[in-house]
Length: 259
Ligand SMILES: Cc1cc2nc3c(=O)[nH]c(=O)nc-3n(C[C@H](O)[C@H](O)[C@H](O)COP(=O)(O)OP(=O)(O)OC[C@H]3O[C@@H](n4cnc5c(N)ncnc54)[C@H](O)[C@@H]3O)c2cc1C
Ligand code: FES
Image (tube, rainbow, N blue to C red; front, side, top):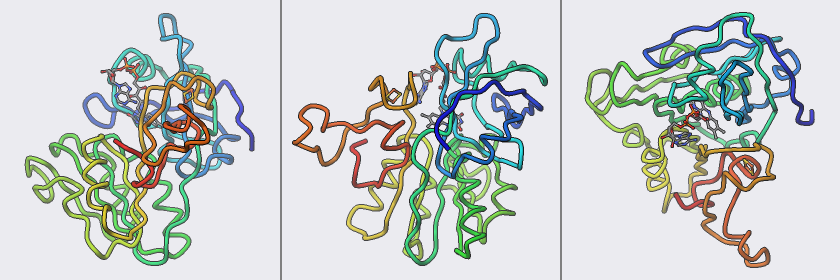
């Protein structure tokens, strides 16, 4: 399905943790069209909401709903978190490229903090297609761990890490990666992604990093979301030095980008 913009209804607003909210949206066409790894742009029409839409991965979906799970970081997410059931929201999507298929063998999903949403539907899809899936869910503290129960039910093995040791292993999420992993997908803070990228260097394990960036358009037009390409394309001049997170991403092979 091509990208479209529609006005959807908020069905539920759940407070998942302090400052973290899940919005369930009635969006049947997006629920069908979205593929794991893709995202949407959300625009609240509430008075005083920011002019620009905010990019968000989808977390869960059913036949006619999708949900987004997000942390309140500024004015855009504050408006989204304040939406009551029955409010209307403009949604643009599906955006970005879906996850690329894994290599044969065990797949590891590494989610840090609010980086877990895009990995959840991917975990379900991978299990359905017969892959053994290990999830690593990490956060600074136990209070910041998200969706652990959902992942524990969805995957073959779920490892939990916290930086302060308040739950699971006292470690950074990337530190528990093992040579059993034959493909890795990671999403989380840039420090975690750099650590996963470092783990991948010198190994021939396809390792995919899902990046975040400030976005204005979400579909490749404004160049507001670029990341440095690790291997610039000289035929494109200055443009070849960058990749657009919204268009070529949001997921890149670890060796494709400079973080
Ligand atoms: C493809 C994609 C998927 C995303 N999925 C999710 C998700 O599932 N859940 C979720 O919680 N967030 C997600 N984000 C991040 C989310 O879009 C931002 O948190 C949101 O746009 C912030 O808007 P704001 O107006 O609340 O904050 P702003 O006022 O814009 O910013 C508040 C603070 O956060 C910083 N910030 C804002 N956006 C980013 C960013 N993208 N990267 C790093 N720092 C940033 C700003 O510099 C500022 O310090 C995603 C981003 C992208 C690009
Ligand atoms: S957000 Fe406009 S090009 Fe990516």
